[in-house]
Length: 177
Image 1 (spheres, one colour):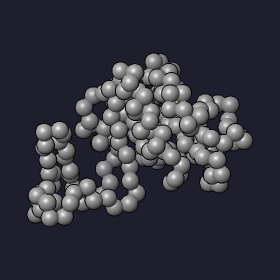
Image 2 (tube, rainbow, N blue to C red):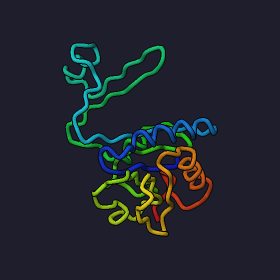
Image 3 (spheres, helix red, strand yellow):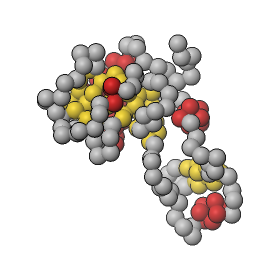
Image 4 (tube, helix red, strand yellow):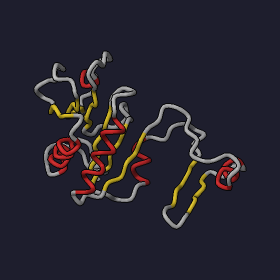
């Protein structure tokens, strides 16, 4: 599984771009999964419904199956589960799009940065930023990073496909060097 991350500050459009890139990669025949990190409480279960009642009763894992899909919810009272553990739970695919997780693991990431962003550039603190997707023509992107059009998911997918086809990148499960 090849990992590609999308990182940036809140409101930068990470999800919008990542979703469009997933769609583009799928159209090209790649199998793709997505993992998203949230920094706030999200309730994925409806209070009063059966799966919620199982969780409230103390079940560590609850599996819900419908004719269209199935989902596993797992309680983590010990805190956040590391990204590596989540990735081990995924079925093998060609590409895993990882949104967020900006301080975990090392794999190629695309920083999403919109015009007018005054926050410090993540490429200054992370050594694994491979590209910057932006709409800011005046943003001074280092020559060592690819500059991508945040409004062109096909261009971003081309970049990801280039990484996947042998340019430096990390396959999950390989030894880090």
